[in-house]
Amino acid sequence: MWKPTLGAHFVGYGTRFRVWAPEAESVEAVFAPERRPGALPLAKDADGFFNANAMGVEPGTLYRYRIDGRGPFPDPASQCQPHGVHGPSQVVDLTRYRWQDTQWRGIPLADVVLYELHIGTFTPEGTFRAAAGRLPDLRDLGITAIELMPVADFAGDRNWGYDGVSLFAPARCYGPPEDLQRLVDEAHALGLAVFLDVVYNHFGPDGAYHGQFSRHYFSGLHSSPWGAGINFDGPGGSAVRDFVIENALHWVDAYHIDGLRLDATDAIVDDSPRNIVAAIASAVHEAATEAGRIVHVIAEDIRNLNYMLQPERAGGWGLDGIWSDDFHHQVRRAIAGDTDGYYSDFDGAAESIARTAREGWYFQGQYSRHYRKDRGTGPSGIPAEHFVFYIQNHDQIGNRPFGDRLHHAISPAAYRAVSALLLLLPETPLLFMGQEWAASSPFQYFTDHHADLGTRVTEGRHGDFTRLSGFRSPEERARIPAPQDLQTFLNSRLRWEERSDECHAATLRLYRELLSQRRRLRGTAAVQALDDDTLAVRRDGPRNALLAIVRLRAEGIVHLGEHLIARPGRQPWHLLFTTEDPCFASAGRPPAVTPEPLEIGFATAGAVLLETDTT
Picture (tube, helix red, strand yellow):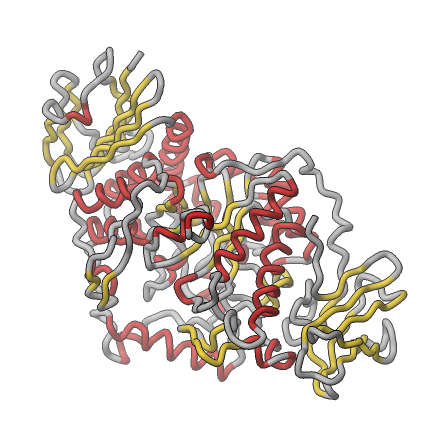
């Protein structure tokens, strides 16, 4: 069974300390005077690790490391930073929590419906405890797995999480470590898996003390879009690889996490014979197998590389899934008309959306005008559930100038239609918090850096938008919410009380119904463009078949008699519901459905769900 090696670990009689500092001559653990006066020298081994066993040092003890007289600095593998990432680390005993999930084994990927949430804005309190209180709502919605945006501690009191520096320590502004353990435990009690977003492509810009311990944490060859690259393939890279792999296993072991989402793996540069992403996936899967659990490893990666989803024995990286931006971009181009930036690579045609849905991604080696190079590989043979589809996520909302959501830009009817498309396809769907009730709140980009860094971050964000039409002048960019402004953070919090308003309640009912139908879907799937504005999704099971006709825009009549995808079973198609029914849209305009021959007259965008008996 895997055991942690880095950081401070309480072992009953005291605490074991271990830290990597290969260039240092001496390392001392310096304790807070009120707990343990003086300093504890650590002994250096042949691999550059400093070790000590300290009798009587108990959980709650605050400590830092002094390196060759410099510092003191917080522990790079600290499990708790109660006074912030610049303060002392704290000894904690993560084995004290009494888990109740002893029968929990996880859920298969084919059953996963992801719900991405940000702890700080998911509830008014913005804590792990408050998030746990909302889990029954997600279970009742039909969600099977929550995905937490990064929780590794960061500088300041509010952040998206991608500026994490204390990678082993849950952000203290969300609550102590045991509150995260309790959140996961309560999720499991409700039948919900918990995924966690982790960031291994860079360290945050404030509070990353790793370089004080060794310059080898950072690459001398590679960089990332967010600063110095992490060293996975240069001198000393082996220890850095072990550090990152241990971090992944730490979340799986100490917090019972069921899945990891690796952020922006395309920004990880590693020329080693075995890529660090493959090494992480292998280590996690091995540990999960030993524990009798299912743990998934999913990547965010814009490159569309099929070998990432292939087993290592076949030359791949062994990942379980990958986020597919192509589906989002095609849909957004189709129904919102976006053309700036990477949207210029997509045409939003119904056939392009259908092809993406059939195959998992759109770019399979074609030239990308946006990236100015060929992009992608063929995904043939990869099961649909290995692709994560979404119509919203934190990036695709928060990286817009005002953090507006998809339903803020399109008609309610189109939003209902594309929601049906997402949830009835065989790929693994991901919802972003509040999507299920068409939340009024935006999700804006917010930070809490010190003044100088905050100014530079704001200027950099404004600079990113100079390429967008409508934001090329300083006056236009001045309208963008300031990341450092507390109000920007507060604007992004969900307003749970609005779910009682009928316009939001109706959307929530639709999502519940769609997810209920999704639970019935098994067997083969077919997706076809019927015309320029309409798609058909058919799911065939052992006893029945479901057919969704999704009209993305405009009125029109769809004749289905000549389409093989609409061939009924032993009985004619019968109507289950439409997304424009009064219970889902108080001012909806339901389409007219003629059963034989099957014909649907759409008065607006919408989706029709039909069923036939195949026995």
